[in-house]
Image 1 (tube, rainbow, N blue to C red):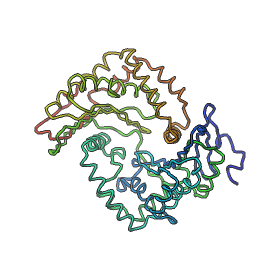
Image 2 (cartoon, rainbow, N blue to C red; image 1 turned 90 degrees about the vertical axis):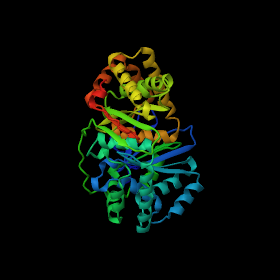
Image 3 (cartoon, rainbow, N blue to C red; image 1 turned 90 degrees about the horizontal axis):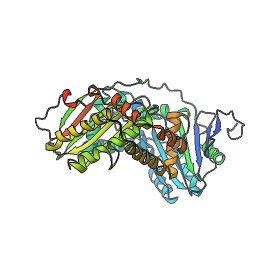
Image 4 (cartoon, rainbow, N blue to C red; image 1 turned 30 degrees about the vertical axis):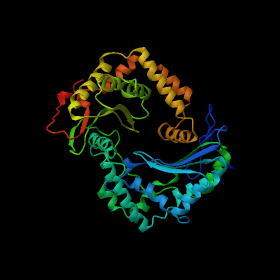
Length: 440
């Protein structure tokens, strides 16, 4: 019988006590999440595949991204032109993206156009054609995309840093794959990947906006209820991937600037320290009032862009700092960066500085959840990483609990010279950097 007609067990059908969030698991294992937002006229929905580039074998690196592209090339009943015209006719915004740990196919439409939008989205996800001619053309497109990114110094320094930071681990491989792996994909490998990954127990279908859960659930079940549970063997993955505190100097004579990426291992996404980590990053390089921005750009005019960022994953993470500057300013920018790391370790942040970071973080969270698409994304990510949903009030309470002592403790745990990794990219000449240079 249909899950919508049953009186399900609490584990199968639940409602969040503080928000209009509903959660239902269909009989085949597919999870459906909704958040009702009656004041909106839009609905955003997404099919999230709970695996990404890090779940690929080395020889198939890039296949998740390749399949993401290929589903838009046509289904068994629609051509690529049909898909584009149908989405345009309802004023929809159809998109997709591939990450290290997930792939998402999503669409945003007016509430009145939800049924046809779901019809197109489900057709893309469930019935891609993967024709040989389309496959060959898309290989050419992605190979050009790889070349384009290799010409982008900002992308290249981050990719070089990541590949050396998580050396010989799937997290270190590029999401796009390599020229060699992408060129090797054929119909069999693409269909096999789709069969193994696009299974109901590996899909989270989330939606937010002007909708009612039970009505929406009936539409989703009509499309996805017949999807059979998967039988393919999942690829075993190493947990808690080891990091390498590398120093990489990559010469690229054509660049006018030197690109710098400096980073350290950080806790995974579900760490109890996650709010303190984001506050530390915000204080360090999270905005125009951050220490790095004021020290490097405002006070000394050494760089146009400098910032810090967190990259948390399910069992690992990284806190990294990026800057772009001329060669003659590189040593000074590196010195000032290390000075700020040292300050965070040896001096507790002022209460006023921490409050400013907290207010910035809380504002970013609230403003970031003001659209149906951001709510849809938030639903799926919280489910995949935490298995529950946090209200804004809960998050703000956790942020407010963080003290300067916790920020200082984290800084001392993270910023250890023997853990620091560094990549410099550009026309470096005879520059050399050894480990003693990274003392902080």
